[in-house]
Image (cartoon, rainbow, N blue to C red):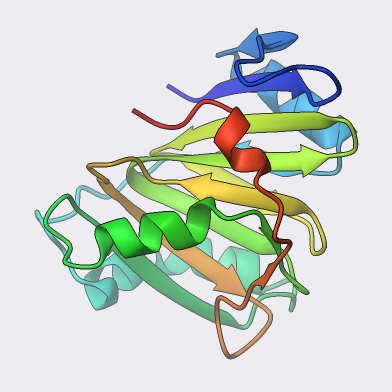
Length: 183
């Protein structure tokens, strides 16, 4: 189930408590919209074969991909699958846990599993636990990090307006160390 927590960054210490938390998709959508973040629930209508590769994932969700790409904003798309057996899981987790920004929107549709987006907006950290059926759009320039957990298990479709795909500029801030991670 999708989950939203909002934390204050000023004076919150090493173990801050959330000032807001909800599992209600309508409240999650509204709170994120107030902060310029897009969030929708889409039906992950296709049962994928265990370990389905990127081509199969993209084919299964061709209609949804076409709908997003119709806006002309995200011409490049791929699918990523992360499992506990992935040989680079720990290195990738550490890379994604470092606060960064992108010069383009970061757009994901989770078709399986879960991941935790942590958005550093002003004096707040907004954590969005995304699971299957969740679509999220983090605007360009938004400071954030992503946690896939120590035993990652997810498959997501990624949309880009940059043909190079995922390109990050790291802030060098250690803020992620002060907030809860994905178990």
